[in-house]
Image (cartoon, rainbow, N blue to C red; front, side):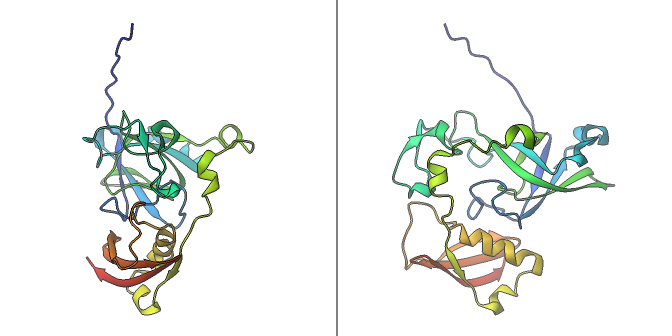
Length: 231
């Protein structure tokens, strides 16, 4: 007979990224290395001793919460964006946010650890696929000698791993962004941030990134940036 066991967990930190909303966020961690982020620990977990030795690792795992999806019901099957949004597969064969427990797992690069007078120890990371202020529940080091398996198979994700759009953006528009954000934006756009079920070549899409509203249109395999506006 099934006996339900519950586990109460609480966040230890939150992440600060350039994405105030879900739209535009990369679909996997460590996919776009140009994206930078900061992990700010909550006061209870700001003891620097908790991070002793972490500086020896190049990458870390983040266990986090789908805070923007927490109140939605889970689904036993989902439609992965990279399969065109038409084919359904089991939720446990994907990284969909609509899960029984709204938990995400991301691999990011640890760039540096900063000692801050106001916020204790701050982790600077790159390659994060998280919305701004997403709660972080745990941090673990990545162990390449155990977790990098060259013979592992990636299912349907492997078959679409090279999918990308060509990005066309006028140089004058791109220069509106701070220099350190330009390559990151182009990489984000090349991964096609549109919802999988939308393929309207006449539609202008938009999302917020690094304090700017990015507007674009997709025709065929080319994404055209139409406007970059300070938000």
